[in-house]
Every structure is written in structure tokens, then in C-alpha cells.
Length: 455
Image 1 (tube, rainbow, N blue to C red):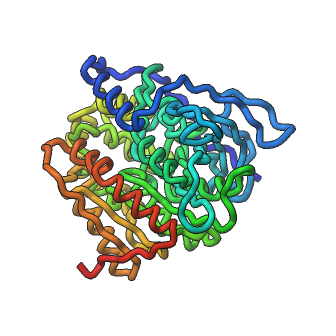
Image 2 (cartoon, one colour):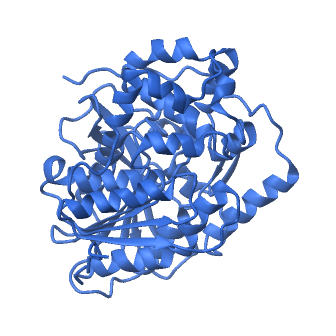
């Protein structure tokens, strides 16, 4: 029998406490155009396509509300719906770059409970020119925020969304479209609690992210009417939060999804050691990620709530409530430069409090990536000037996997130190993207990976 969700999101959706400047809005618009690859923007409209003849026709909004009962099998489809990509062109054989299907599927969360996760599968219009059947990439998005409006599937539908107090930019769309142009099918996960209103998004939760990504691949492979076959190879791709999910999925796959044969995993800028990542984020332009992390860990570990309540002052409690409904744009506007010490009753920073609280230490230690060895080739890439998701802890992940005998390609991404943590973190997402996609495509085409652990 399926357990009912533990929490329901009740926080009102509210605008950021800071007003958006016209210059910042123009910057976000430019980012949306950049990641779109220059394709035309259309108003997206979803047409319901029930998975079964007896299923009701749902609006796109209702689609995201999970049913009371979920199936037992991980990756099993709950419902599907046709979806129009917000960035597309008409083609002779259908829309370019492909035909999208919104998904809801079942996963198992870090507490061992059933959870509904949404996402999107995109069938490419382009042919796969490599050897063998069309391959699949399961893509884990980078940080989108914590409000349901921020889900990556919704960003594919509306690449730049401003309204209802949320500002969302679909910056992952460029990587998705690049895979599609190569004839590689893509499935994108929204993660546990992002998009679905039944629970708070468990931001950077290692198990939730890894399971959601692997189950997205399972769901895509079971979707009727695609060109995927049982022999289609599968790759993983993710940067930042997505890099952590891809790295976790690569570690968990042998035990959680042994039937899913992986060809390779790109693990970009992974938050492998959250203790060090918290220090990098504190006081940065993306300080909102501290709020998303705290909210997410309370969701997955309710025993933390008394500790958080004890240490957070009124400003901190308000910040957590605001962060829970915002996307990346809101987080930057509302909390850029904020230090966690402003949120605490003791004036201590969050990293300092972690040092004194064993329960916090254990929760963060449980999130450590690198203690298991992936059996698929992995490419770990990190910007050498990245201080937001610190370069050193990502490099350590590559070293940890190498020490366990994994097939690791470590790629330090150079460039100019621009003096802004968020920019130094974001830049390698773009500058290394072509090489990262080529590396994954080569693995999907059956070319062997050459590790560089010795160096």
C-alpha cells in the first residue's frame, strides 16, 4: 500500500522582497536567448494525452499533482502528456528539434518511500548516425530553485518565465538541444518535489537525485512509441546540482538499477562534499542555495527541524519560507551577498554551526559522493577558479573514484578568474559543454574512454 505524502507545501507564493531592476531582467532575457541556441520562441501549450484509454484528460497544471496511489516499480510511468517545446521550429517530419512528452513516474526517496517525479522525454527529429540503435541521455538539471514553477520541464515549455513571484530561466536547454541535434534522445528529470506540489524539493539530496535520474531513464525506455530499443545505450549528464545527481546515479546504478546498462556519465562541477560547498555558497550571489538546502534536508530528515528552529531567528525563518517558493532568479535578487550569520540566533554562520551539531554533521556526511565506485566511465569536470562549488572538492571526487579503480577522465577547466563566484561557476557550463557532450556521445557510440587517473 502506498504511503501518503508526509508534507504538503503550504507556503504562499510571494514575490521577492527586492524589486527586479530593468538591467537584471534584460540580463536574464539575454541568457534565455543564449541557451535557446537561437531558435524561435513560441507560446507553449500542452495537449493532454492520457497513458490509458480510461485515464482522464488533465490540464498541464493538474498533470503535476500526484495521485494518492503510486505504482510499486521504480521508474514505472504514472501518466504522460504531449508537450510543446517553447523553443522549436516546424519541420517536414514534425517539430524541430524533437517531439516532447511530459512524464510522471515513480521513484523511491532517501527514506525508502514512494515518490512521484515529473520530467520530459524528447524524441529527436534528427537521425542517429552512430552505430547501433538510437541512444538515450538522462539529463540532471543544475540548480533551478525550489518553487514548483522552477521545474526543468516547465523551463523547456517556457524558457524565460516571469510571473507569480517567480523568475525562471531554462539555461539547461542548450545542452538538451545539442544532444537532440546529434540524434540522441533526452529525458530530463525534475527531481523529487520540484514541480509536484505534494512535498518540498529535496535540493542536493544525494539519494533522491540519483534515484530520480535513474528512474527517468527507466521511464523513458518504457514509454510507448519511441525509437528507443532494449539495446539503446544510456548516458548520464549533469552540471552543478545535476553533476551531483549524475555522480550519485553512477554510484547507485549497480545496486539500484542493475538492469540499466550505462555507457558513461558526465559529472560537471559536482557538490560532492556539502560541508565545503556550504562555505563556498555562504555570502555569495547564490546564497539562496543555503535556504534551499536547509528546506530540503528538513523534508528528508524531519529530525532536523527542532535544530533549525533553535538556530534561526525571525529573519532566517522568513528567508527559508521565501526561498521555498522561488527560482534561481528570485534567489539572486532576494539573497545575493547574504551571510548565513544574519539568519541565526547566535550570530554564527551555518558552516560554524555544523561543526558543533552532530546531527547536522551526520546528515551532510550521508550526502558525500565518492564512497562508492561507479562501474561506468565517468568524466569529472570542474572550473579551476570555481569557488562556489569549490574546485578542490570536485577534484577530490575524481581522486576518490580513481583510488577505487573507476574509469575516470578528470578535466580541469581553465579560463580567466572573473572575480565573481557565480560567474566562475557558470562559465565552465558553457565553455566545456561541447567537449562534455562529445565525450558522452563517444561513449554512446561505443568508443572506449581513456582514463587519466595516472596523471
